[in-house]
Image 1 (cartoon, rainbow, N blue to C red):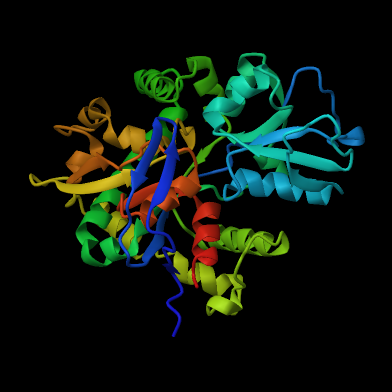
Image 2 (image 1 turned 180 degrees about the horizontal axis):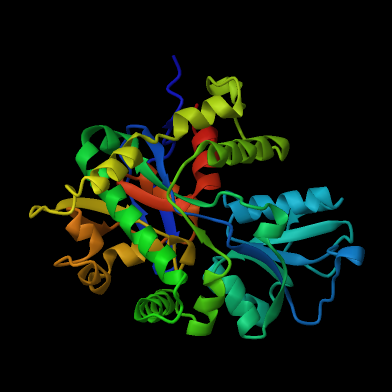
Amino acid sequence: MVNRNVVVVAVAAVLILAAVGAILLIPSAKAKEITIVAQVNSEGSAIFLKDGITIDDESADFGGLVLATPGISSIQHMMLMKFAKDNGYNFAHAPADRNNLDSDTIYWIEASPINMKAALEEGEIDGGIAWEPYCSQIACDDVGWIYKWSSELSPGHPCCVIAVESEFLASNHEAVVRFLAGHILATNWIIETTNDPGSENYTKMVEMASDFAHVSEETVKSSLENVTYAYEMEEEWKAALEEVVATYTELGLFANSLSDIGYNSPASFIDHLVNNTYLNEALERLEGDDITSTSELIDVRVGWLNGDIHQLARLVGMNKTVGEGYGFDGSIFEACGINVISGGGNPYANGGAVMDAFFAGAIDIGYLGSPPAILRTVNGAL
C-alpha cells in the first residue's frame, strides 16, 4: 500500500541555496515525509510593476513583460501562472535574449524576494510577485507600484504553514506540542499587538521585523496591513488547500496524478497531509496552564524563509524581551520548553529550499508555504 505522505529522496546530495550562500547537505538514504501541523498566515503577497508601466483592469497588457517569482513551487508562482492563463497569456521562462519577446506571453525568472527590488531598479525585470515585506518595500521606496494584492487575486488564500518531518513527529510528540504552544502564544501576541499600534509592543514588533527583513519601519507597518496571522486549521482552510491541489492539477504542475499515489480526490490527500492533533493538544494544555513551566529544554532544528514577514510568529516566539513581557524568564519558545536551533542553510530563499532541507535531514520543523509543501510531496511520492 502506498504511504501517501512519502517524499522519495532521489539524489545523494541536495544543494540548498540560501541568501547567505550555498551549503551542501547530505541527506539520509531513507525517504522523508512531512506533515502540516499549523497555519501561520494567509494572504500578504502582490503583483508589482516598475514605475512607467501603466496598466489598468480595462486594458491590462502584460504581453512581453518579464516578471520575477520566488520559484516554481511557491504560491506566488502558482498565482502568477494562473493569472497569465486566466487572462489569455502563455507563461514561459524568460530567454537570455530578450530582444524579441512575444506579445502573447508573460515571461518569468526566479529570484529571491529580497533581491527583487534591486532587479527592478537595474532593469532586469519589469515587475514580479513576492511576499511581504518586499511588495510594500518596492511601493514605499517608490521603485514600483502594486498592481494587485493576492487578496484580490485569491481572497483568503492559504499561505505559510508549519510542517514537521514525520519521523520526528512520531518520536517527539511532546516537542511538537510544546513548539505549537509557543507558536500559538506568539501568534496571539502579534494579533493583539497589531490591533494596538500605539503600544510599546507594536513599536518593538516593528523594530524586530525591520531588523530581520532589512527594510524600513514604514515598510513593515505597511506589510502588517496586508497579512492575516492565524494558527487554526479549520475545515474552510483545508478546503482552500484542496483548491490549491486542484489548481496545481489544472496548471499541469504535478508530475504524478493523485490517483497514481493512492488518492481519489484533493480532499483525501489534504486529510492525510494535515494533522490537527498536535495543535488541538497544545491549545488544551495552554488552557490548562501546564505547558509553560519546564526547566529542561528540547532541541528542535527549525527552518524559515529569508526576511519573510509572514513568518513573524517564529521571530516573536524566539524574542526574549517579548517572553519577559509575558512574565517568562526567557523567550516564549523557551518558556514552552523548546530550544530553537537554526537549521543548516537558514534562512532559506523559498519554500522549495525548506523542503530540500527536510529531504536532506537538516531540519525537524519548517516554516514554508503550503503550496511548495503540497507540490513537492505529490511530485516526490513515487
